[in-house]
Length: 399
Image 1 (tube, rainbow, N blue to C red):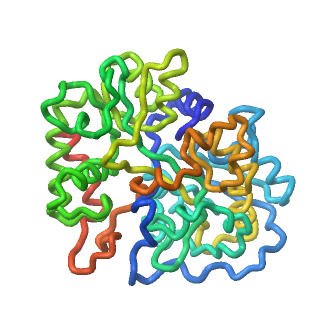
Image 2: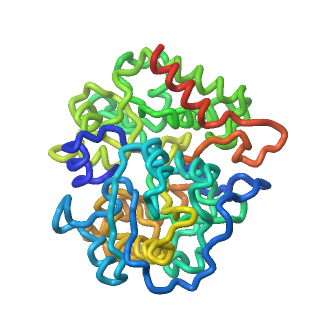
Image 3: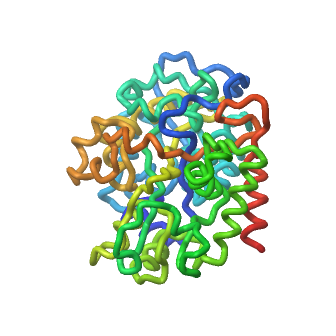
């Protein structure tokens, strides 16, 4: 996903598509109210001696053991502290993560919001007893009990970081910094110069723009779209097609295109702007006035895992102040634990990624899996589920 070293490693490995995290606004409550919580009961504890092994399925950069860079290693200290021998498998997309986790060979997974509810309702993960994760108490309240990590009052995982999907722009093409997504969607804009994210979840970005510009649609949550709202978002994306230079999936190439000016505006990450500006400040990044989508990944535990004690030790380790700081800085995100901000090498890291700025996150709508039961709480209508988002996106991209 998102850091200097990770980007280089991922690029060299040929991993092109890197997905982000979860949904609902930063202020919304847990999703799926009134629905039964799958997965059985959470582990009662107490957490005892580890079982000696733990199989981790993770985004690149989330479980580093020194094999990518000898200096980047928080897995080996975990093994020494707990006696849990860790094996790590990385994945390139949320779809791959869901498929791999379904194979049954993994104990924990770092799930993005477009995967987490699929794992919950696929009965692949168990509820998590947050009382058995001591560092959970310190995490930002804005990441707890949200639609991408909870169902009703049942928690399914531990959040470990967050980021916003920003408007990235070429300063040469945009001498006046834009403050709106209009340049990405307005058909009067220059053709062939915008670069949207190449994934079905990008439909939510169109919905965020419509929330502000078409209030009559009454969209309250960009991942809870009834058929009329969904059709409006698709219509906006079809209008955008002639403006598109490329639908991006590779952050390295995206950064190069923005730096060269072949892309004027794009949706992406602060990390991408940092990469583009490595030699000279040529790309700007802003959260537009309409708000933005975003991500907060969640560590989840396999239902019925034989290594439950090692799993809980890992959950607590990953959000401990020092380790959470290492991950956030290496990966390129805001940490989940505010105590991490004093421990980053770059003392401006948390300011750059808005870790302590809760006001920044109020109009960031974190990725989640759209479901038929509307995650905005509506009970008098059905919302368009994720499989239809995928089909519609595929049709749009092939048209």
